[in-house]
Image 1: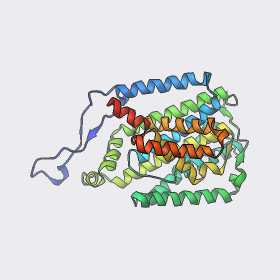
Image 2 (image 1 turned 120 degrees about the horizontal axis):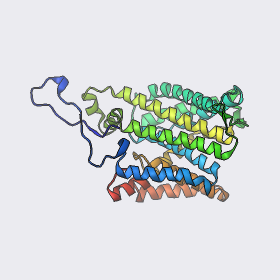
Image 3 (image 1 turned 180 degrees about the vertical axis):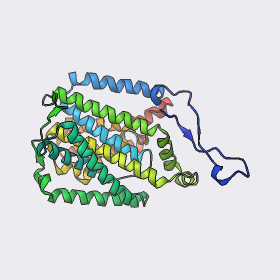
Image 4 (image 1 turned 90 degrees about the vertical axis):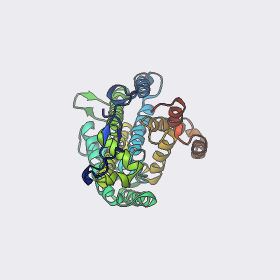
Length: 342
């Protein structure tokens, strides 16, 4: 894994314009294996232990839902946490990935891995088109454009014949993985979903800690300076937008196979709000924050469901408390307290 890169080296006076500034690479003393710091390796070990042990004392379907939303939150965090672009329309990719995967599995008879790939591909195409339009603006204008485009997708899903309208796509088969392993059993499906989540999580970590990741973080911190160094910032933002959309599509596609249904709920604007909440509660711009935030929100929704509409009120109260008392999010505050990177 590539370590953090500094973009602040200045050439001597009189140097050629093309060589005024150039990136240098240094290896932090605390860097561990595969680009993880020692603290991150410890957190990764805890995460893997949780994945391995939790299905023996928690309901596997609940855990699969948690992993789907955790991957969704990690994909969203890649965009807002490392590029600084706030999207209010990520439900479009999450929901459309679910619809396409559900349709591919039920109508086309594709295997689960191909159905998920189909959902991710369509989400990526949407991300490419919407990102190309949206990245021309920044701040609140970018957020409003993404919200408007996502609402177009929502109304398309209301009217399109293949989505089933308000009924959604129901009785989606889980299928047989690679034609060999049946996923009807919850435990078999659990390991498949866990592998997808862990693979997506590690991919995002690799992206963030690659030379590409150093550039997008530089764009977040100071875009004009990054442009002055010769980087085509719009291209980097568009590629990151597409990657985020693809991973959100993978999460949505996986969720539709887990529950056997794809509905308008997953493409509604409120889903975009939920993923923002997960990311902020866990810790914006941290690797493990979105996972913790998703765990908190999904656990509340699951175990407080009998309270009805009060779940939303409690979520709002927790969000306000986090904003006031934990401005860096749960993981962000822990990392700041321990003076480590998480």
